[in-house]
Length: 404
Image (cartoon, rainbow, N blue to C red; front, top):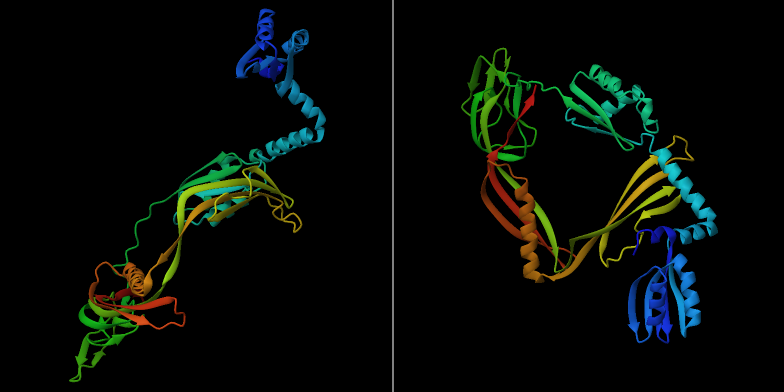
């Protein structure tokens, strides 16, 4: 196929009858452009011929005992003819592309990156005071001047850079590295971070308010950040400090016995769902309540799937009528497998216990020591469900600091 045929136009025809090979040879000898000749059956051929050569080929066909039929018409001339019959579609497409080009010259998204301590809302608020807002022309703000303003308005920033990416303005910042706050000398109490029973108590600095064997509640003060000149301990073990206290940072080792419980259920016949990894999607433009699909459709070919829908406003006027007038919507269909698993009563009991154990152990501190654990069945009204109570006992450091 010649590359010019797409511009000048060509037709794909079906040629059959008595000795169609003779017609093809005569056409080639007269310089008629013919290509992609395919033999279908006896005395039947499919071929392509240029738009100008088709008229000459028809004269040869009339002089022979053959017949010809057009299968398809391709090329620029036929596209122009179709466009003339669909003027509204052509004009609408032109204005749609023109509208998209016009909208691409405005700022519709503002993103802040590189910030950890300084909130993105503060950076956006300072940028808005300098004129950076959604819906403004991209050429209406000075990037260098805005970056300098951010550095002067927010002292926690050491560098700021602004660049555009399509209709998005990206504000990149770098924060100043501040020395960590020294809390070693700040007065503080050691309090219980969880309910438990004191197993071991070692006081280095401060005044103890509990003894070994005491049951404590979360938030209860264990070692007060107070240092007295004198402390009296009675025969019963009661502590009575005397003198004017000095505020200090309490220090000590407090290990307690902690009991955690969790109840988990598992159906005897369970339906398990999960992603297979296959996905498809669609992108549509919502314009004044009407949805125009730019890619894909709203239908999914998967039998089991879950849908993720994300909406980004392109034009968001403050007026109530035009709120969210233009939105870009992305839809992702993720295929899922559906498996029915027959656990049985014993299997469901084991699975419920395993799930409860994983939940509790995931919340344990690193330095804890497991001393006991047990499982107990829990009665439920639904006969198709098995419930298990998992109890975990540990010995761990239960103290945490609370500033005075």
